[in-house]
Length: 121
Image: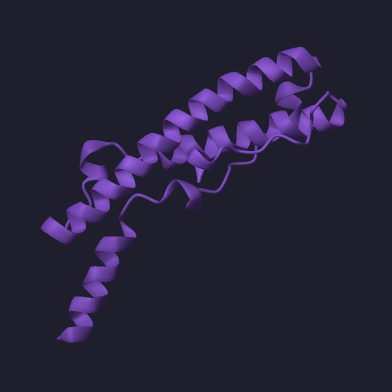
């Protein structure tokens, strides 16, 4: 009986929203940004960085809500509320990586030194 409860508890936890740091980037081809010059790439990086930060914060809230929902109710709530944005977050992380790869390829000033903000972990 204890094994059944433990396995069902693991199954419920598996349905929880991932922590933002556990969301792996989706590969986005560099060619999506190949027509941009360094200035445009920098602007795109700033824009995508804002989007990435907002999605990371939303995913963090979904993860916390699921943790408390499972503990209190035994149910991950993010699936019911639609607050799990892991797929969109993965694409945004992939876009950021593609932009940064293109900046390096074009030898843009400051390329390769950009660090993902700590809020994105």
